[in-house]
Amino acid sequence: MRPALPGDYDWAFELVRAALGEYVARTWGWDEALQQQLFAEEFERLPGQIIQVQDQDVGVLVVEERSDELYLRRLLLLPENQNRGLGSDIVRTLLKRAADTRRPLSLHVLKANPRAAALYEREGLRVVSADQIRVLMRTRD
Image (cartoon, rainbow, N blue to C red; front, side):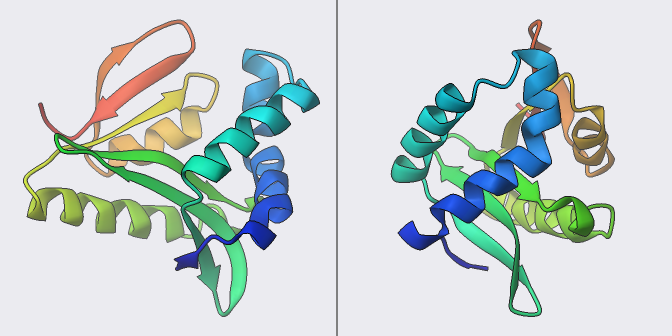
């Protein structure tokens, strides 16, 4: 892991398109201008970390340290780096960090992305609530 820097912006946005674009398009439709705006706001507020494998950038991790929970805002991997255990390893590290600080790990996942929901469920997160678009998952209340 390394801190995300301003120079990572374009690469990180393309990662969003590659990893989430299909699910965003299914849920709301892909509006390029809106997606750019939303991403710019989030990247400025919470740039997160760049996940690297053998010095190659392969993903983005954004975690919010809240007083009552550890909130996983974003875990994205390039499609060619998915299904290799890297996401599971990162989630397990976050679960340990949450447990060590006696906070739950929480996240939202799009209903249109059942593969991500299955990953989080395999690692012990459970559905707490859902609306038409997203599911809230958490380790404990």
